Amino acid sequence: MRVALISATESTGFAPGQASPLPRALLRVGGASLARHQLALAAALGCERVICVAPVFDEAMVSLQHVAEAGGARFHVVTGARGLVSLVSAADEVIALADGLLAWPDLAITLLEAGPGVLVQPIETGLAAGFERIDLNHASAGAMRVPGHLVERLAEMPGDCDVFSALLRAALMARLTQRMLPGEVYESGRWSLVRSEGEAHMVEQAWIRLHSLRAGGATPTGVIARNAVRRFGPALLHAGSNGAVLAIAALVCSLLGVVASWFGLPAIGFAACALSWVLFSTSAMLGRIERDSLQLPKRAIGREAVFGWAMDAILATLMVAAIAPVAGQIWPLRGFAPVMLLGLARLVPQIAVAEAPDENTRLASGGWAGWLRDRAVLALLLAGAACFHQAGPATSVLALAYLGVGLAMAGRKGKGRSAGLRD
Image (tube, rainbow, N blue to C red; front, side):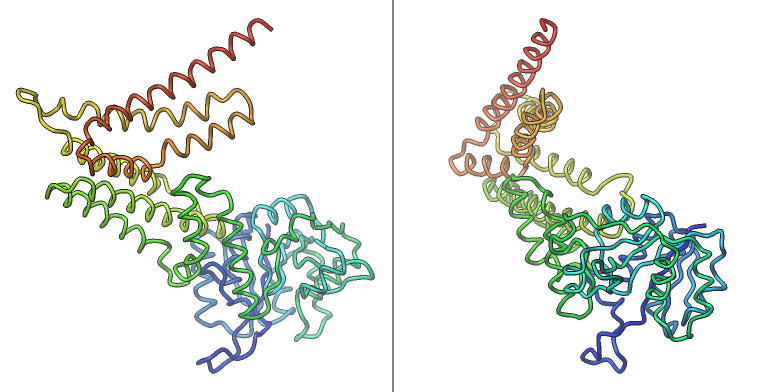
């Protein structure tokens, strides 16, 4: 059995309005406590039992217990090393994480899955970051994977000893492999020992920046959403909204767009849809940051997909309403151009990425594909046309433009295949 060992014994001092010192493990980064981040890492590593070293079993421990048990793991709280000994057998394997450690999930999983060992780092960087010295040249990296029989040695230790430090010394005496952290982790926020509220705020900014680094691409909506997340994301995540407030605002904006179109203001309606798309993209980015940080499972049906189809339906409705009726024309024919435009807006970006002949072209096509699928850009173009009462012709022109891009991509693929056959 794989067992996770986390700690909540170190204190950051008295927080305003609190009668007792705030445990370091309860400092929050990205809306979740450090202990919650470690619990997510333990679950991703397949730990079936989680043991938390803490002085008391309080509400915070109850919350962690509920999360662990919801993931199928058993949760225990012990006050010291001797309580730990009875919960770990020699056949078990222990994943131990230092109190206050915040590790980049994918990197931590890769390093710990590589085999039993102690994660270390150069002494200069380790000591400066607050990690424990282990020898002349190395400091601990705050994580290790050790065989369960080493836990038995803690029975000889004083009851009030630091459990992680004691187990670290036992692992070093047993000459377990020392695995050096790769240089990439020294980028701020990837691997930190958070010891105070101030450090938590600093790490949080870097943590969110790293998670949002590639999200959204270089499209207008992606850039706006990424900047909004970096500026307002921490406050929203700490409020526990998970971007839900922004998602509701996006829905309200799209409905206001329909109302504006109903009253003969299509330009305002399309502009409201553009704002709605930006708001929802920001909400979706916050949701992805939380899922990636806490290793949460993806939903069977993503909110992005549902909202994307809903937005297309609203845009189609607005385009149909903006197209001037022709005498004798049945109303479904007015919907032909809008449906073709939105259908191509879904199909062509996929072709642009999938049919790229090499990686460099794929990256370039991926950037164009982002622009082609950005509904805020499409809605603003239609809003501009509607200002001059040209939304109907603009719909047809945009549909032809998408078709032209799709045919060009398909032609490029055909040439690539012909060249391959000649070779």
